[in-house]
Image (cartoon, rainbow, N blue to C red; front, side, top):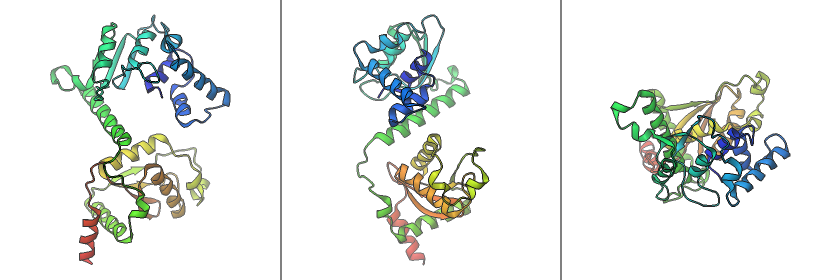
Amino acid sequence: MPHAEIFALLEACGHVNDGVESARSAMDDITIATSNEHQQVLDLLDIYKSEDGASKLFKDYLIDSDITAYVTLEPCCHVGQTPPCALSLVAAGIKRVVVGFRDPNPRVDGGGLKALQDSGVDVLVLSSAAQKDSDSNAEEIAAANECANLVEHFVKRISPREEPIGNLDELINGKKRRALRAFAGRQKTDGTIHEVHWPRDFSISDEDKKDSEFGERVNLDVKFLERVDNMLWDHEIILLRLNNVVHKKKGAKLLSERIANELNAHVAQVLGHTALLYRPGFNPVLDLDELASKDDGNE
């Protein structure tokens, strides 16, 4: 699958109307408006994968424009099923590339930057600039940190665990669930529990919110799922506040279970329109057995 900058180029060069929706269509294999639009994306990707595909799609399309490309991760420089992203940017005529984070993958690791620079492209790497206080401003440092966080969470998602966690709903018994609830209760008292709010959406009617089954039907926003996923990686146990989408406990239960299923997490508790979610980190911080033992001893 081509990386994000390729879909941005497809939009910039006029091949698609919306690069983001085209990427979602290609990843999920779903239609984005009509079957014709979906097929158009697949046809473009077939061209891109063909011999000299980058030139066929992008050659000099943007050569007369002073365009800067902003990318989270260093563009790749190796040939796989698709051409290197770095050379695709060069083919299109991009003049400047701002990179949020240098790719630590040994197959890249500066190779994409060099390919761009060797072709005369002006390159700025924020993660390097942020280390030099005299050359960086607050916005650059904030952007560099955000890109580093995005990459860190992405790597966790795609990296296999040394010990797979399995199905948490099967592994967490009542005793461990009570321990998680007690731990979260202490965090609430201390004001340290981490919360994620479902964003306010004015297209959701009050009737929908009162409908107990709406939690099963409402669309799961990708950005919301990503935020919950990141919070689980960072904190392992979080509180979801779902009052902007459901007003019934059953609706909150249905919705939180869908979210947990998407993220391989466990719903430890549902109270009103809030839900407690748990998932061990890549290197787990909470020891559930120890927590359960302590709480059992305090009973």
